[in-house]
Image (cartoon, rainbow, N blue to C red; front, side, top):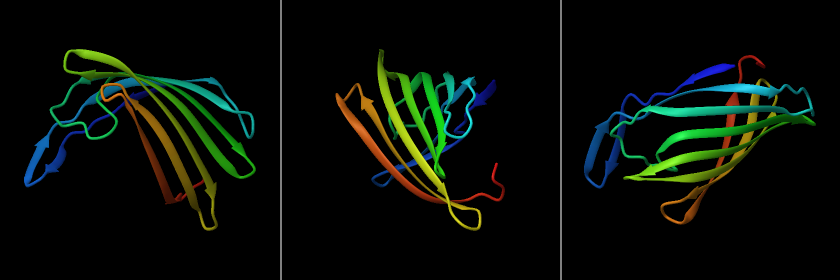
Length: 147
């Protein structure tokens, strides 16, 4: 079991000519491995986070979450590492709460000299806007050690 804590001590945002500094949210939770895998045999884990402090900062990403449950699956196939996640977020908008669903797929591959190349695609429902948000990220990373 792993205990988790998140923090956004100060969030700076600019809208038009107006800048703002505010405190962000603080979530606490845990993650536990249900099935430990190795190589092509996947690892299955579960995670839960609860927001213990609601900051004043404007939420600019996929919504403000009060509770989050995540199912995580991870495996390695032919030199590629895969992470697949399913998220279930209780999002809050005023006095209303709705469920936000999210899915992510991340793929990475080792390159020479401890570098790696990775990509991620994610989709989140937007329950208050009746739409979806889709994001894509590509990166090159450096890992001083394999672990």
